[in-house]
Image (cartoon, rainbow, N blue to C red; front, top):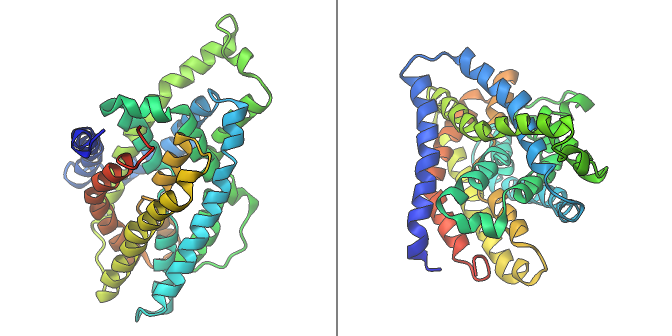
Length: 340
């Protein structure tokens, strides 16, 4: 399949993402939908919709898929470690005060590992059905879930420490989020071999599952609308001085140049020759081509530290990412062995 034949499906995928983001941005910025509404919407997504989404997707998988997913906790650990190591090395040469360097390191090391990957996993098959045939939907979602088992605790501990400057002792409950509980519930269905009970239409469990499955499809558009509203709120923050521009430049270098270059190098040197499934390669690609985690802004605001710096950098990295995303997707889909 040529790059030219992939261009329109990739463009149409981007259009869907942009329209949903734009709707959230427009409502928050120009229609006066207040912050409390979107805060409650975000709470619904995190506490209800996303756990249900992960549960219904993961519960459809099998033991073999789950075993293959064990690669991703290790991948999350390695990617974060590499991000921290590279950002420490780069920020040593950037003239910034210590707390700003730490904030930059947090944004360079931790990506939006849930929202962006599952958005592309869900949207892309609509415009390019071969993606669903090649990678599937439930299995990549399972792999994103196993990735988050390690990434989420690291984000709320190490990421929070870097961005907020908080050195408070991390509590166990900080590691347990509603989406993780949804993922673990899906794992339990697979590991305890409960699928015959869950998917038997003669039993009530099947109809409960089908009700939950009706909620899952609305999760994606709600996530994008909520993310658009967050970007609209971020746009009010301005860099206090040139430090915001320096931090943004370094974060863009690491997240949008270093990690993508590392992925494509690893693909030709290592990944292509390993017995990894197409879905595994797809999720590794997604997790190495994402902007910083928006939760870092929440951490900075809660701590009252680095709010402007984090908001400024997040705003511009997401704008830049929207322009780079089609290029990343085209390069990935044109790799030998991906769609062939």
